[in-house]
Length: 389
Image (tube, rainbow, N blue to C red; front, side, top):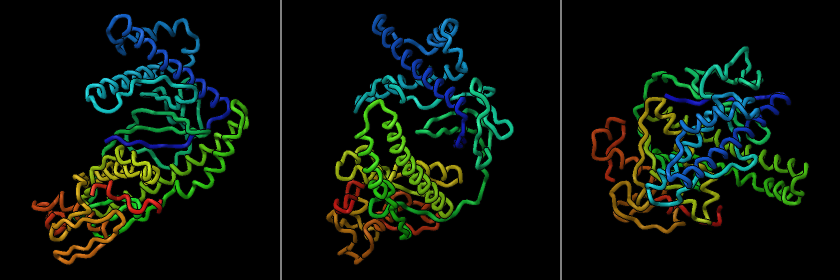
């Protein structure tokens, strides 16, 4: 399995200047590669391969001094990024739906990471991270790295620097819980489990909005290009980073609790990109971060040996989880009341049970995971009262 460890870096002023210079060289190289590919296609009608660009780069290094200041493997990784950008463009072009997304030039400040694909370009020595052409950087290793380190990525986030180690490892085998659970994510409650447990929505962005408004107003009054504007931009970035870290910490902790208690985890296969087009709910959906939460949940489940499945979200809130009857509801109705069997419970709880049933009902697995086989809304129906968000 692959896993990434992220640590904070504390470079000196000299080292930070070298890192910034390296980012700028890589940004210029990235843009130059895009120009070369575009011009080559316009003149010959054929694409320019990554191998050919590597040959051009080797020739350019003999006459451009700036390229010699950057580790060779870091420069080569830039060519791999360009190649991946074009591969993604051609893939989207073949799918023939949505935006194709032609690779764009990176403006100043928009290229924020470099990658050392392998050692000896990077190495951990005596509690410090040694980077070729940069030096020994102070690193805060709050936990040990388990597995074989494959790549090292240095990333700039505002005025902070981080390193991400991608490692290959074998997860430790542990007993897998026998219980199964269905998860219905929402906005009033972040998630409701099929056993009735509700996870409160922390709404990190909403709580920080007052501070964000103040610092963003302050930023809008600053003169462009001035030092005060740079400080204001850093203040805005700092608040957004805090919100992002709070959300990520919340997702990690809740996903870990679920994986520790359940062996079969079932969630809805949501089309979140389509859902955020709703201008009334887009901010609340983005603040909840369902996509990142489900991604972490799937990753942790795989590591722990649990099963993670996604099911069709259609009518999970409409169908009765006991008798299967359709019980239409308004968006503001938060309670499920079935006129056929008399079942009364929370709308989200009913949906979570339906989600679990779609993965287990009618199969032997419904008993193998310790759950009874019962008879079996899109989250677009989770709008609820818009005024609440």
